[in-house]
Length: 258
Image 1 (tube, one colour):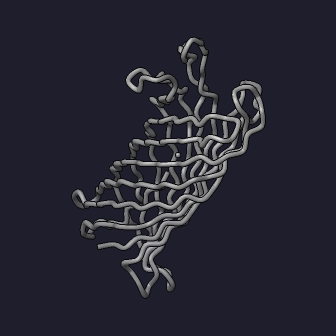
Image 2 (tube, helix red, strand yellow):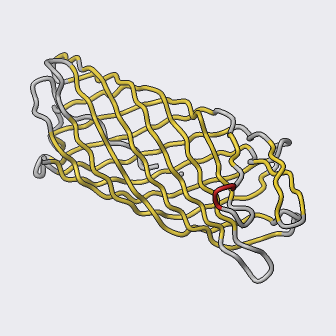
Image 3 (cartoon, helix red, strand yellow):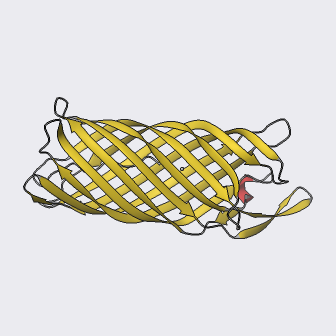
């Protein structure tokens, strides 16, 4: 369901800059019953692209605006609504927009950059049909609100910049639109329970290529189960609910700085 944003590299005396890059991450998602049993898992590699602008805002402040897109098919291993084991593929499409605002304090070769962050995430999930099961499309939307701190140094012989970024956030205002029935204007929308998450990222620029940014990252978050909705599909009435879920991603990002 993320591309993880790069660290703000603008120094207290540096200029604003633009980043354009690509990402490749391993996606791991699972839903759980109230008793903790795993109902289904989705795993696989997903490529993506992103663009970001990092302006300096005075002598000790900076901001960051980023947008990203990633899409691919991953493996689905779970069960039907009747409990029959099911293996298929799920097409994933992820879009995010993020804003950060932070400060910077530098002592010698070490700089500390605390920040606040707000991220809007969209995840379109299309479970593919099989010979004995129908497909299902679900569209997820949520916010991630939090903050973190990056510790950066430029004193290494092999890297012009090296930053370790640690962040935490709350997943909130999550909604899932489920494509049930024949009227797209009246698809049921479930409200997910709030959860928590964290991100860890290590980013550096090689000495020989200071405009190149390379990042390794890991991110994980969860949601509590949603409310229950009574919906009509044809002549039948169904009670539907989004289970509690856990997600993680780990991957690499490569960008050019202009």
